[in-house]
Length: 272
Image (cartoon, rainbow, N blue to C red):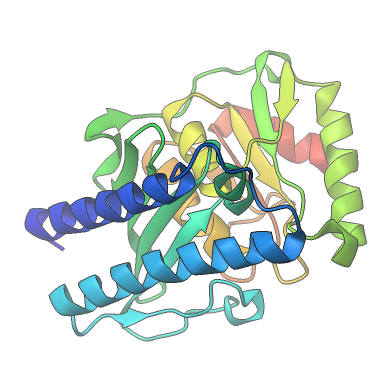
């Protein structure tokens, strides 16, 4: 993928993000959906619109690259889906924030080549911030190079995590997430839950956050983590699964930080 291709993808994602921003704030006087069913309908309509736009536009430019339809099927994310190249896309990450009409949602695009990410883009339409990384070329925020934070003491850190999307359906995952947050609240400077997973990982990459961890669903949430973790790694960070093993296909959790703090987080989370 050359510079022209990268520029095309960046412009495409920004264009899709502009559409999301317009939908998020289309009528400030109208309150968010009042039921879960209405919220799902709002999400599905916006998600389908943006996803279709990106899929069709990318197919026109890169007709030989496959498109993954497994965003919401983690059981299909245990190994590469295609030989060669394919796109994974999350049109709206942080859907509840989007539906409720405030920030910290994102959209992302990631190119997989022979089972390895080679390009990742995470875009925040509210702040007009585009994070991207290319294999071996580093990580960038609006085309300016970024790197992970340099803190070394866990007690100085600002870290984040996420609950499962549907805690009632995954009580064990929800329980361990809550217990891990409680433990690290006593060990760090601050623990928060902010919304978009990919945006939180991008914030680790640029040093706004010192670390992110998540245990994930029954099968893990590999595609949810992959674009952000790739950006963290290209920004000089360390990414493992929740037990400290290499982060790869089939991983059921993630820890992202700098090298020193990753070791501290692995040790603390091992006791949860």
